[in-house]
Length: 444
Image (cartoon, rainbow, N blue to C red):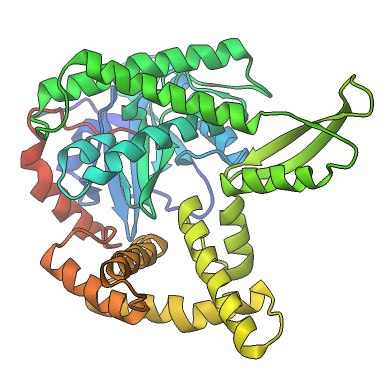
């Protein structure tokens, strides 16, 4: 099949990534699979555009073809999301091509937005179609609601919130959601109630339609509904969860002069939800000596920040919370043994030296290298809890580790995806027959 001849007009790449000059820039993106051995298949969603994934070592990049003006705008928006520490894919670069014999305005030239593929992520279709992931379906609703709350707090009006524009990462039995498309989006200092309401309406319509479309295209598990009305209820459930969370983090307290302890209680409540509190405002309430307290949250990464400060480990929010709980247990054990108070930093060092690193070393030896080591360790902790509940006693980490390895060998796929991009491509190819008649276009 012949393709129009193109040439690379410009290429902007952020530092720390490949130069991508070995790619077939003389061809349109849809033809790259014919010429580049770097093209790989990964779990994917749907997209309106041609999208191709390419592997450079252990890192995979997504290339999406759009007109230059669209690609530039989305690149700038993704950079803005990154600067505000909002959950989204990482923008890597922007390439613009020209087509031989075809004159076009600079803004209309074919261009490619380059982003870094979110390792160990899953599109929503995988959560509804693949065995072993059933328990994550209900978590999807909380993840979507939490994502929208975080984006709206950061001043991000999405304009096209849908399941196809989100990727999910397993997070210690829960899910974390990331935005992967910003074509119709806007960044503001603060969203108005009207902007938030519009985004929620778009979300409800897109989620219900996307799930109904999925049910019409592929055979879903018997326990899932197929009627549009049921999917509309699912979309409405996301809104309800969003509104409860939004109301909680924006709730104001009326304080009496002697109730300063309630300030710390309020901060701890928000921290337990994962939110970092940047500021606390105390204003006269207009009712005598009472004060009105308003908290200003910055992000939903409180435990992630704390874990990284103590250990240098990068983890998802719930993963970090579980790992910090283990450190607190070790802190209590050391305090009891030494009969003196032990700083959490000391307990964190002992935990890494005696539990975390030895466990991961054993898992790597028995199962291979994992892309998400924090999730792998958290899965072992969850397995330990299950075994302990069944045995009515604490079975210990070593016993849980051995049993987890045995179980994973019997049921491959329980652990997170391995780092090797070739393994990811092979797994995707094996799953392909189950995807029915869905178009082979991934989402970015």
